[in-house]
Length: 249
View 1 (spheres, helix red, strand yellow):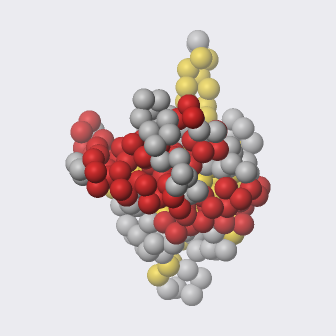
View 2 (cartoon, rainbow, N blue to C red):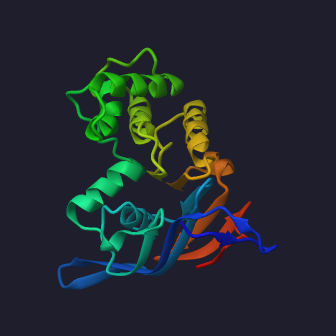
């Protein structure tokens, strides 16, 4: 990962994500809708980077491109030092499985699996035994307040409880980058804080970062940097480390 130069010329945290000139359009009938318009964005390892702005400004599209769920029309997308636009097929899938964790608004839990089984899926997919995977998942679920719900099915859980299972699933394999879309939208204040504290532990690791798209002002205090987006571009960067924006190559 590339280093960042701070105001004193010292090396700051390495970049987990670097996007430059990213463009993305969607077609509706004969009309092209330009969602990202040459967007520049960086997120550093060891930090929580928030992405905020009005609905429809391109936030979810940007993180979907960073997470290799969507492809960009143009621009540079480097994730953990890898140019993901150069990866194809199995190599891209392997990179995503090994390095990324996802938390989206839609919980996407498998209805026929218990909370523990759902949360353990990334480890099972990576080849770890089912038993060891479920033990690791159970530890995370307990820390998220679901210790008494480990064997319940998604239909037996509230929306907030399902979201906590989704958070555990994103963290269980120790990803180097966690990408979140409204991770606390369905949680009450206490549960949301518990979830953010766990995410914060991941973000503070020297080689790990977290990107969070949110409208939840209750959690803004957890951010190290806040990128404000409007009409497909980043308009403002603020926060504790916003000044260290230069990139050395």
